Length: 135
Length: 334
Image (cartoon, rainbow over all chains, first blue to last red; front, side, top):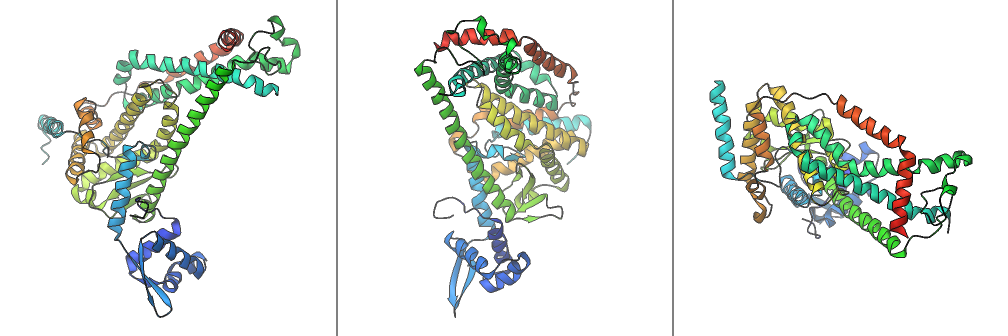
């Protein structure tokens, strides 16, 4: 979580940098630039700014080694996704995310256990009647 | 003050009155047409509900345009100017003549307040949607994708299967969901979500949410809820057609529901099972619909012909609508 209490949101380059660090582990700005910056035609300064922004969003830690900062992720990809999904569910509760998300089963509405059991029994009964005999 | 500014409150009031007529029509459809709607196949029901959701806005736009037609003809041909036939005290829905008497101040204030309220409410909802869009974009950008780029896999044990994005919808699934389902069930869930993407349901829902705000209290929420169920059932039918097994789709829905339930959702416990208690749970309706044979899609030609006839009839009565609107406005505005 960021200082604002919300899951931090990422731009395209920020996401690419995080992906690089999640996959490859800690790195200096020069190494990140060699991996991402050259292909995108962006300068080392841009990569350094992006790393600093991610550090300020509490997504990265850094240590000064010699004259350069070495950056490493503060949270795993799974923890980051868990935070985003939690926020998405909250947004759905407030009705904001409904407009941009369709879920296979509604994230903001749970069927009661007795209703689920009744429906499962109905499906099983229909299967038996059709003689499909799936397990 | 320019003619446009002086006339604008009259046009706004006329549009509000026509919007109210459309809202009342939609409210009447909710009361008297609910059973007929429930009998329709999902796709036809979705289209009908979407048309009803657009009814207030459609009525406001079309009837205001129709009521403005005599004035527009006067602009083109001054000899057709009819305003001389009524006195200067009459409220004018007119682009040519200034209103003889200004609208009552409190009524202008009410119109301004209503417009300001709508703008603030839309801005609040827009910010929420923007925030949700940014969350989904961050989720997509930091996840792995399949070769097509359309399927996004999120690294979490929480069972998730979503379609996200307005203009470029993508299907998002979690490792937790994939681990909990058999390959056949995974195919059902993915086909269902791809159907949402193909139908651009998120974009349509955004439009429906915007128009639902113009309905009478209770009607907009009902429409959104019914639209959501109809959209889910459309995608269930697509998955059932692809799998060739309606019961597999029904059992997959129940299995995913069980997985989500077991994973411990983050919603407030006080809200859990409320909708079930009311007997309107989407899962229940979806599963029960899959236990019976699919309904035949009716032809929409008759509905289309009736809509065109209604629009044409209103156009043919332009003079009458104009005079009726002006007479009503004269009573209200002065």
